[in-house]
Length: 332
Ligand code: EPU
View 1 (cartoon, rainbow, N blue to C red):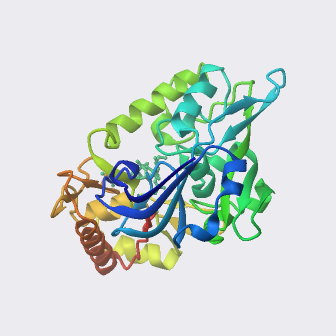
View 2: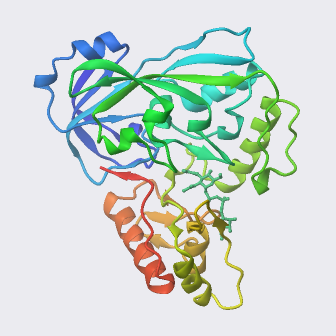
């Protein structure tokens, strides 16, 4: 167990905002979590994973909690659907590499997504036609209201596009481990158009293909601070979509029709059309190769720089297309 007061968080958020928190707690087991002297911890309490989907808008006045529960347990390798229990503090991509190394199918499309297992379960991470919800079958938590462990089935997790019951519950449930189900039988998922030419002979081959695509489009977190996609892809009505088309005469607007008739339009396209690629605000910038990503271009961007760039993008896209973008990155 590690408890530190007035702790520097600059190494704990991938945007590399230079902020501090009143208290930082890192625990290594459910027992340690349960044994914490909660009454002594400054509020609010906020649990983080790898800090890869967060924007600290200033110093955090309360307690930041972090899981160091790191284990990967293969329940029965003999089954075709292999159950695997994974601690919330395990690095997501290290887990994906390990699963692919064992020849298990299911997680390979989710390669190179930053962050930790607990946050993957809160956020329902997704990429290239697969979401976390497709491979999870149960989530174990510690309930901060009742102060006791509890479990949820996938149905109870209420998963949707970057959504879950855990997000709705506003931090009540600390995820301690997840139960995944991976497949021994080949199950390549290559419907996403960018994956068309990828070698699907093994989970590792697909992983390598996905890594190649992501490296070409997304900033390397080691080189450039960011929090991945800054905005969600907006889901709009058919009437709203007609307005978008009318605002871009002569251009085919990329879109995906969802069950029920609503239309998902890529936020990257809307932002790109408004000419924001490479746009700067203080130390922050819109990433050249993928305008859905805001980067800490100088390493010295302040939260205000990022917030101002966000405000300008939202206002311009709304003015031009009548579409309200909402952030995917959580603001603290
Ligand atoms: N586009 C442009 N200009 C650009 C780049 C993209 O117009 O410079 C348009 C194109 O029409 C392209 C479309 O945007 O077809 C969609 O781009 P892409 O398929 O690369 O993905 P995305 O919708 O921008 C989502 C996720 C990513 C995930 C990719 C791949 C969200 C908010 N983002 O991005 O997730 O990796 O799909 O599946 O859903 C993340 O959440 O942090 C993240 C990176």
